[in-house]
Length: 249
Image 1: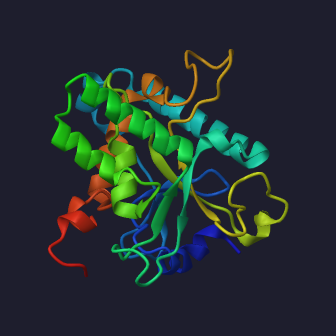
Image 2: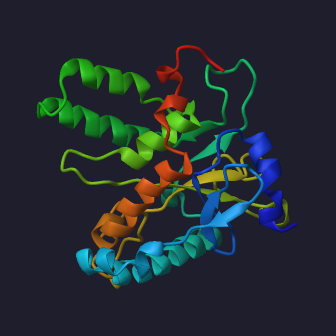
């Protein structure tokens, strides 16, 4: 079955995934349309805006790099199942299990620990006041609703103001699941994974990047646009987060 034809079924099973970035096994990059019926490829009309290009002279080169990096990420993840590429995975909504009525994002433990460390550093440096940091830490759980979790990942900055994460949904179709091992949980149990679009391989011979989270150095303008586009797609909408509702829908 073509992965794109599976979109309505995924939307039905994983409530709330519309608008978030999605990549299929062919490397097509886009998002799930608001109506939940189709995969929409992302486009960058800014390329045709002379004023934008003049204001961001590195943008065209960044976009070429971004496309290259995306393909490297896909191949390395599919061929080697490198765990560092993953941020977590999604679980279908289960009525009454959690207060949110969406799919549940389950983060890897090392990602949660990294988030905690950053918030603790911001507190120690006085960037956050204790009450603000306390509220943040209370929300830093490995299990949370998709709106809350994906927003926090895309918006998170360390104490130097550096972004390290950008969540990307990746679906393993049934035809390709057989033999995929080494991930926890196995893709048969959790076929909709959350990858880090900012992941870069470590080691020499790969531009000026040194590891995970260094994508911002290569593609600053592209990632800034992608964050804006998440909001335009309706994916980052804080009114949808449980803690910002007066009552659950």
